[in-house]
Length: 95
Image 1 (cartoon, rainbow, N blue to C red):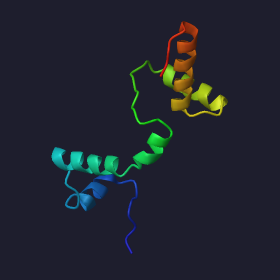
Image 2: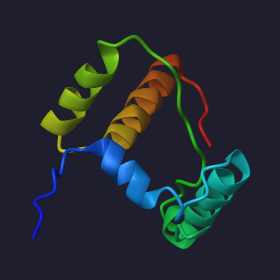
Image 3: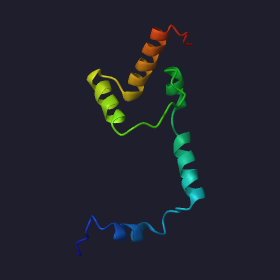
């Protein structure tokens, strides 16, 4: 049995070359299929069915993740907590 180098990416690409369509249309279709397979009922039950994302500098994301973890929260829950705290400070009405 010939020994294969498991880190040889060129060989891996050759092996899979004919098995996957990497054209833009095919990639987008695979993305839609995965997105469609997410169980949206659990998101709606938690009232978390909207996406909220933004770009930031390289230092903020690790800091936010560390702070969230120290509080036993996920980063999304932590960001929700921060926004709600700012809304309370402003006296803003939140729905």
